[in-house]
Length: 133
Image (tube, rainbow, N blue to C red; front, side, top):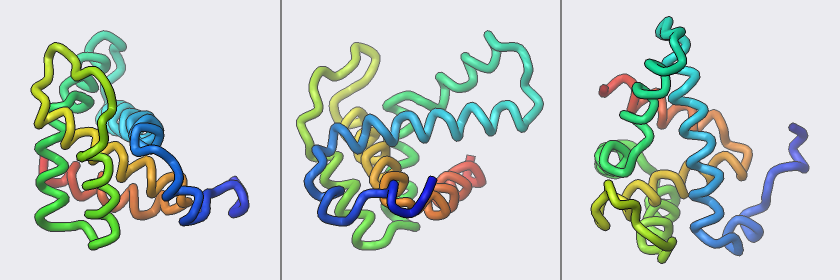
């Protein structure tokens, strides 16, 4: 993508947190899928089960807390807080409200950084989390 395909700070601020989280969810899931394949997993059903273990509200909430405490800039904390505090709709049956809100904060941050064109920072954050697990 060219530099002009990324969003400006003003455009990013105008996007609802749910939109940032929507994009962040896709970026995060693709990262997890790639990591599973790089680990040598080749059976699709097993791959899917492994990915589901990482791409759920409970796990993402734990990852959010690890990042928030140790690794985020003030700007990133603000974006994640914006996503965490947003009203984003129905909480899935298998998630509690607190975990869902924190996972939305993580997804919002990832979406924000990706749409800003800062995939290097996305990679840093996700690699840091991967090392901790």
